[in-house]
Length: 313
Image 1: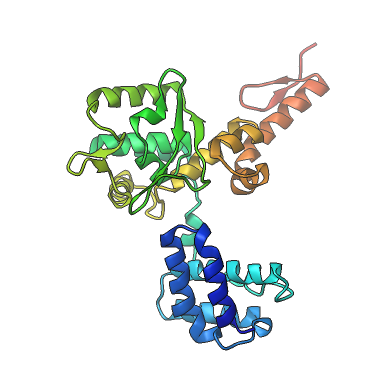
Image 2: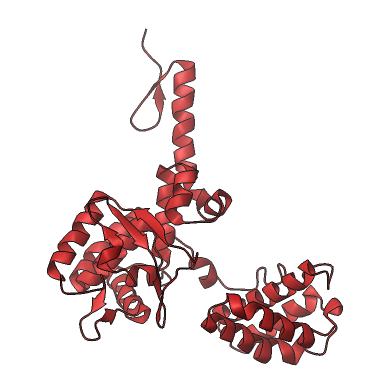
């Protein structure tokens, strides 16, 4: 079976379970990026070497690394299904993009430090009250940008200190989230108070982050532009994106909560996913725990600095 034949069948099979926009991106990637190179090739003869070579060509032609990365992801999903179906023994697209993409792709998941968050927030407050509240909710609740923008006032339980995530805002409002189910998230009391104050000023709004001109939620483009301006004025690296705020939250909750609690807060499918994404943040917490453990076992008294002093006799 050729790649063209399998890809056509695969696109028809995955269409019912994908958002229309996602499926259109997949179809465009197959048609424009992969059929010209792999269309006539027997599926079993496609190699990782030629996939890597084509990815290099796409990058050399000036295509954005994010777009080329998406093309590789789509091909990997297609060929993984072929491997699962027994059409080919292994997926040749697996790891085909390793070390090909520049650092900005890595930065998409890079969290801000607490010092950077504290440096950013006053600037956001000066620029736009809505942007400031958005950053606060993102960095404490761990919601994705579209999920925050699609919040309605009836999604918030001020008394219980929770927010229920039911939908997302992309180019349009989708009545389901990435996980395809509603999720209830705990918010710190200070954030609940900020939201309650905001509601008092925007009682006539249906949406928490409503654009007064359109009576619809602000667009992701609007938030991204405001965020980029705030980064520049705060003197912070320009590679940060609004989505980095979610990863900031993940880093912090894993440093303070159990892995199971962090998983629930970030709404990951497994604990392993949470640890894989944010496990590096546990280093300091583990170090402190080891110091306390050693001090207790050896009969030492731990100083506030984390170092231990011998107990005087």
